[in-house]
Length: 340
Figure (cartoon, rainbow, N blue to C red):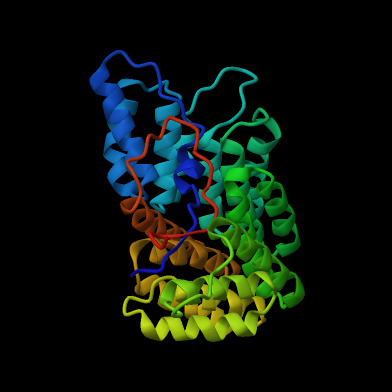
């Protein structure tokens, strides 16, 4: 039996949730655009670039194909090309900036210009209509740029705003936990982990200790222990499970989060690194996306993006096919995979 803690981070929504299909002359061209957008959402910007380039060649005034091509270049770490492409986006006077501004922010982050990045992300947040799905996406990127700049307090405030969007609550809490843990704010970090565990416990209910203590019962009891603030007890149970489960499940992730909450930063960092390389795809995908936050705190933006893309690809292979022109679906609370 696999034990998998699956948090759907909605990164497909983060990248493309606000994108609407352009009005194109032919169904074939629309399919080309959608294929490029799907590849981009799935964490493969390099593969998306030829499709989006073809869509742009046929509809150079876009603006959405042009904006997404700029985003693809930015995520493919072609910063100069992303900036050039973003300048080609033509929007109506007074229209809020879109993914081209996010692309500029990412490119400037990679170029180690976090203040310029923050300004670009801020322009989206200031002008996008309330409820726009591009807002949670932009706040995520803004938080990362703030972390890279060293403004962890600002990043925490941005994550507070992000948590108000129900689809992104779990994402915001996990990022907050890591930032607080890195800064030695163990009391606050532990409180955040407790809240996360309470969400999981609410999903599967109170564990039953009748009969044998199988892996499922142990897992549930470990999460329940965290929800009660008993991190040491939970650590011991997860260590037992880690030894029992040949593929590791997501126990390594829990152990890394406990280490972060207790101020054991190097242990947390090693735990996330190991979780990126072992276990089910969903757990490895989540570990990679959390490692992206760690890389941001180390001012390593290129590796940050590489971890994000790796995580998106892994989690995407476990998910249903994406429809990238719809708004992102709500983020599932913490769930154990096929455990009940």
